[in-house]
Image (cartoon, rainbow, N blue to C red; front, side, top):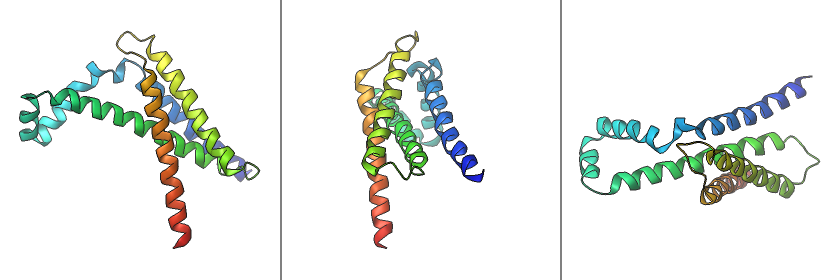
Length: 153
């Protein structure tokens, strides 16, 4: 029974993170909804940088970097959660698990971008699916490097 409870907890974390991704896919995380709080945070924490950014085209660049960074982060976390949940399936070869993780992340990203085409304040983007898959892949590479280094030490 404890093993089953552990599996439920692992998969529940995956499902809850996918709910977070779905929430960010709504108007709550649209560019118009997030630019104000980002500007406010920057204005209050680093006023000189905010003043400089306001006089240049950098606000758009900064917004782009933050938004695409969020894609990398969201799907990196999803990949790590999926990898952790699949790690307890000893019959699954490691390569199969990695391909499964990246495939699931690609499917979730595709569904997320499709959903965004239905939200008035959002747009879906195939490029964002690529960024999401890159985030998932980068997280898995980081995990592999980390495990290799720990194995040597």
